[in-house]
Image (cartoon, rainbow, N blue to C red; front, side, top):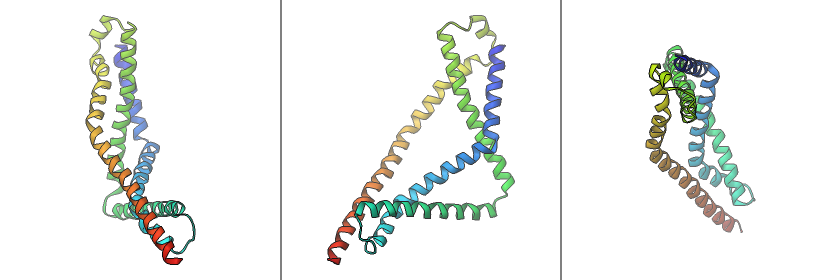
Length: 189
């Protein structure tokens, strides 16, 4: 019975944390930064090529300035798109759906932590057999961290491929910018 009460408390508190607007804003900020980084990786060579003939500095600095400038352009562009989309979609419905989704995600994360605690107590023989048998949620809470781990492992190849694509683009764009900077320096001399 005590295991079930803790299960309900952990899941309810996690849902409450996720449902609150602070978590939603943090998540939205994270998505905004990731999208802005993706945009900036692809816009950096264009901005670097624009700045290179006008500035007489090292190519690495120009690329960094281009990356930083394109990041700010990406943030502004994404914010403009998001505000435009909000005009078409009812804000109350999106907000409720987002709150419910983040509540479920945060509840699941806390449930993973709770399940790891259950596993640790089980290894230390801290939970007797009678409590395990009477509990409605013990088996689920005990197995949930392993289920979550398998889910994350199944997504890992896609994440690695995406990261390879992003990091490959950064390197490719930096090399392209360096070649352009060298050519423009030779042309100026």
